[in-house]
Image 1 (cartoon, rainbow, N blue to C red):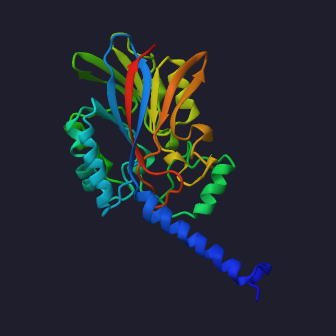
Image 2 (image 1 turned 120 degrees about the vertical axis):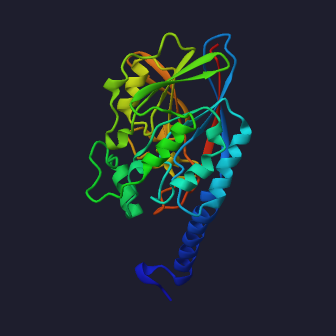
Length: 312
């Protein structure tokens, strides 16, 4: 007996079963298989002690995600020198208390942050196939457009106030500093380029000469932001947003980045070149997903412990 399109029923049933098993794995196992990546980046001046930086990104908290909250809380045990939060903490307007609970132990450590589009606006239900098709055709979400009419406003203001009260430095189109054991760490941040809230003209000037090191922070690694930071001479840019591709093909990699960054640099450490300068770029694959596409495949959720070391 044959099914539609001429395939034998056994083959059709096998394909269906394999697809169902893959979906169960992607949603029920890999999307909850949190892990820590460790990266070393030689960007500090000679003679400076190494600095341990914990980057968390794309938490996309939904109410009830107890395992994710517990894992994030446990990261404080790493005792980093400081934390960099590269945004998209929310995927649920009711998720702010749980984000603050998850990050509570880390908020006792010095930190800086920027927000992403999902901090400001709730996600929309979309056909995942349409999403993949748009991205492979070079269309990058909002990428400069205003949020759609009727977008759900997330209560990000309370999250911002809690971060600020804990002493984390808001880098929304501005500069900031942390003082650590006599060192001055300068930061330059941008609001999210994915919804065109970035204003590089407000942070012109490049690295601060009186700081021991200057770092750049942005949620979505759009080329215009990376080019500007690199041209100005920042040694390291930290970003998130891409989810590492989220649905990847084993031994091939990501199909999309959800921005105009190439898929070869969708996650991890790479180099970016602009106007004769070279910066390190670290893109976190993040530890969450949109509430409407709660799957990951060949791209487990992560946080990253970066050890910054002196240049050779």
